[in-house]
Amino acid sequence: ISFDLLNTLKQKSKTINTTVASLRADAVISSGLGESRSHAVRYIQSGKLKINHKEIISPSYLVKEGDLISIRGKGRMILEKVEGITKKDRIKIVIKRII
Image (cartoon, rainbow, N blue to C red):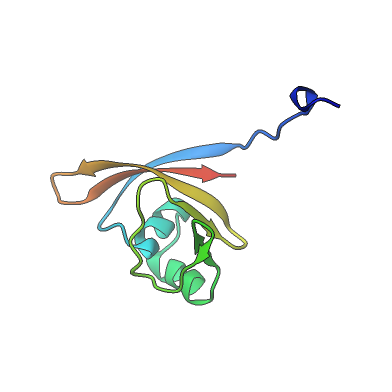
């Protein structure tokens, strides 16, 4: 069978426009999952977080634009864009959550 005839899996995704206080891993994950920051810290400290396929155990790890964030048992998300700073000094971000 030729490669062109193969059906490719289409990933469903959800775009989340939100603000965070900083680009720390726990803040970005809590915004992407819609859970509290303390839950995000538990995922990180239990070894369930990988950023760009590398295991991260520090909640203070700074996430960069374009990073792939994987949480075992919860799914994946990509920090698509850092749009700037709001009037209240929060950072506007766009997260693409892969469902």
